[in-house]
Image (cartoon, rainbow, N blue to C red; front, side, top):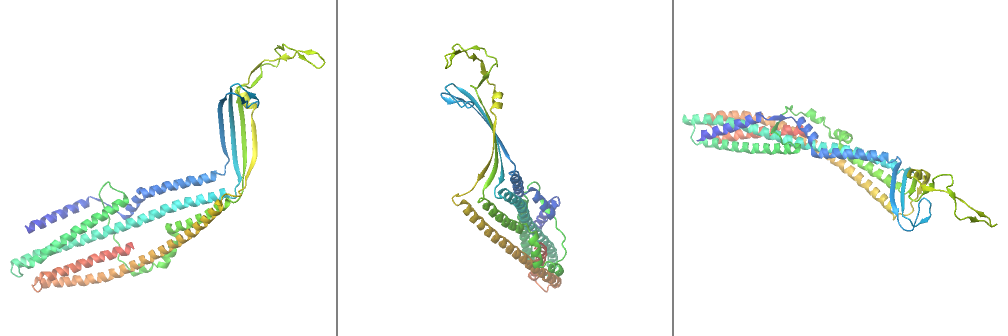
Length: 458
């Protein structure tokens, strides 16, 4: 029964290895590239950058003149004024009015200029925020990648331990059958095998959880995938000392997008103060308005020649009778009226702010508060950056010393295990002593892998 269990475990382990061998292994570089191309948050930030481009372009185009056209048509009923003759009429009047207006700002206290500068800063800010988010995503993916590396390394060490313990069990079985060792020694070995199998199950579950975390960070759900195991060199002190925290911090001040973002936000806050101050100055604009109209009552002479004489004469002061000629009239055509009634107005408009409920004063106060808040945030980001660099250096140094001491410990434990195994085979030690020696070596090997990855990923 026991041999059947071991055979089943071996078959399951082999099938798992076969499945993993058919899964594509992703490198860290491929994970980062895929995330940058498919992350939803980065895609949203790309759209925000496009919006910032449009806003910046619009701020420049606001310096151009505007142009608007208007057309109205209606019928006046009852007593009303004919818009073409300015006379009263009781007839229904069909009227059309058309106008074209344009204006351009000549001076507004530098508002347009400062707004253009601010929109340019906001465009740069949108790009930096994209870089900052991508940088944070990179760190999250590296952390998830590290967890998988550590988990799979631990499973690998446990597999080696299971294989060695199984080999030892076969030796113990032969020694028991030969009467060299008591039958009870096999129980400690079986207990260790069961413990190793449980450790492997837990390790496999941890790897699966880490893979799921990486898959969710990548938003990739198509096919199962694994990761590559890069062959990192051994940690060394020379490499560590080249990562001087102060030099790293000074370099990061000019390269980290998070710090650039906070600095640019301070510049935008200062620019907002300039824009608020522009509202205290007058605004000068040049205006043009062209208009014309049409009336259904407008008439013109049908002919320059008279069509006859008036039926009743006109009596002059001297008593003479004069018959005046009569003329025929017709409706004036639409486009003729439009051309005849065409008029234009060109003017300059000056708007001087006198009192606006202290809106300008309050906006200046808010802008100054915004500057102070941005400056504080900039210092907070700088301090956090320095703290992270110093902590990363300290962690790397701790990982280096842990790696060096663990490596020396492994050499000693391997020699101790060989000596223990010889004494155990000679019946000088019990199986529990051998199991403890194996566990100490396995634990040291796990710590060695952990220290190595911690060093390179800090």
